[in-house]
Length: 169
Image (cartoon, rainbow, N blue to C red; front, side, top):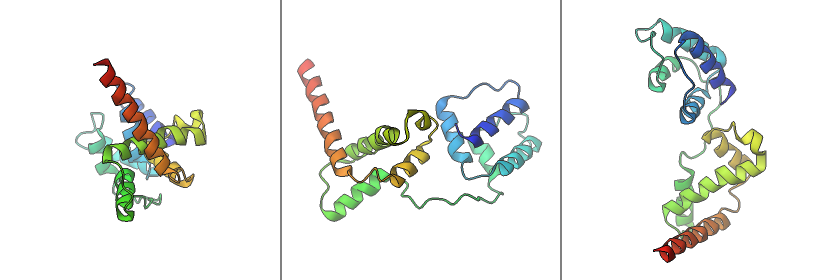
């Protein structure tokens, strides 16, 4: 969780006594939604939501987003492609160097996010990273520099796995 999601969940717990700990995926979703906003804006949105017609119920992400958008987003949004897998594959296609299908790119990006980023920042710091933070860190640390090698490694591991399954059958 992030500072902003911690603040949000602390307030929600105080406002709705029956609120339990959300699932990890929900925590990540909330952290990503709240990332662009200041704590003051989150506070104002919580107050507005509580005063509204649905205020007696814990908000869903979709409901609460409506209360956040009147506030100016002060954090500068990155100009990163929405799908690094698609972007990297399209760049390889443009250069005539695309050897693998899209699922291999997905696994390779996942490897960068979950292995290389963890190695770069350490496990303790990595635990609090959202998907967006992993992406930003991978780009900032230049972890896509050897992406061709990562693609080859991921493809080779996939082939080994397939051969192991075929032998067991």
